[in-house]
Length: 470
Image (cartoon, rainbow, N blue to C red; front, side, top):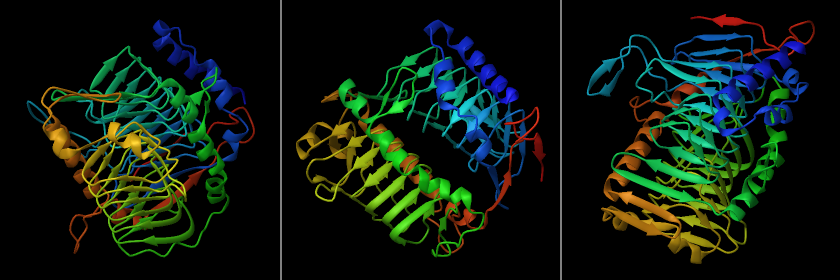
């Protein structure tokens, strides 16, 4: 496995050079994460549909257990049990708006070089105006269950359960369980448990208390994850591995305009409505998915009901909960209801990314509310929610508990609602009579092709260099 070890060493050195100013060494994380025997065990697979341009090019890499869709180029990288989902990449002829319309001269492509992605989700399209045809991740390490959503990265380390959303980062460290959507950042270190959204019109910021965060998502001296959320995911990991052990599975009976991935876990009683998308590596157990709802990658819907047009963003976890119509549950949120302490969220709510609700009794949150932070009891609701009507009145600075909002609340709400509408449209939730197709319809006839690594010889552990064109 000399070549595989050389690959890991190259990635460590490339990333360390970019993070030298922070005196941050990634070697411990890499060596304690990657078990070389497992990198031989799992096949990689890529999806082909008639709806997405095809281009796959892999060389000098290990891509064990990973899934690719859309146009992807991977070089000198280790991508382990990750999902690189390019079904929303921009197309040739599309335009981006920057003072004037800038047309794309070719299809956008995801390009990953000299990087390690470990159980990571890559999705959406690049928001880097300087390279609109390339969604690039270079010299970067992402730890367990990170979301890289429309974000280009150069020389970064992303801690476990972090999310970087629609932005560009250069030589940055993002701490565990942090969510950042802040435009462009250079040489910044984001503290663990930070939820930060910044635009020219508003800023939202919240930071978890250290003792609370470490109970749910902590890291040891080698930046390996621990805590309640990690244990929750780890306990269910074998259910996913069983899907890789069988080549052909009986398809799940769902409406003709809905899609449940062959690589999703579905257990117990279930009801799948019309125009529903259940992505690969989603986990459903005793779940009701109302019409137009979705469960994206690394989401868990357990003993819960989603009323309809509900969005569960990448990594969201919903347990023993009733979610009202057209409610958004953000990235890596943990709604950990229990049989004796269920969660009831009203219609049209927005659960901010990386929200934790871990009740010791029933929790009820009214309709049309913004929800954030840490909620343990009904008493905590008043310091971690606000009605949209009240937020819309904000013009300057608003402080509620540990949350600080500045700017125009009405613009914040409008931006979020617009994004929710775009997600529903892209996921096919609004499909009707042949119009407004989305992923729920396009992913029904996807075919999966697998590739395996060399298991012997000097290239042991690497995958064959392969290029697939239309």
